[in-house]
Amino acid sequence: MTSKKEMAEMLRQSVETNNKLTKHIEALWVEIGEKQSKIYELNYEISELDEKKDSSKKEDLIEKAQFQKDWLENYNHSKVDN
Image (cartoon, rainbow, N blue to C red; front, side, top):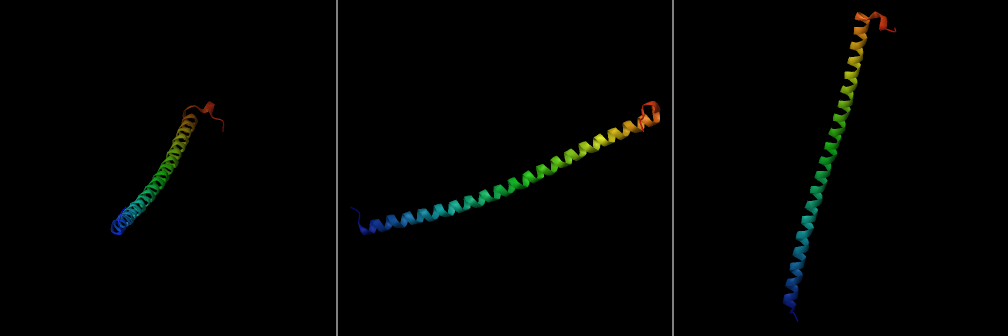
């Protein structure tokens, strides 16, 4: 059997180990939180870029349509409806 002194030492080591693991787990949760924040920020940036991309596509289509309309009005009067 183990003596009281050895039991006390084993208990002290267990408490130390548990404290270290607790601190490590807390640090991991902080890291997870930081990474989640970064993911949210990147997803927001992606959605903004998608909106800008869609907007620029619409602008390109409008410019093409306006050019076609202007060209038809100025150079091919028979194909203009308005």
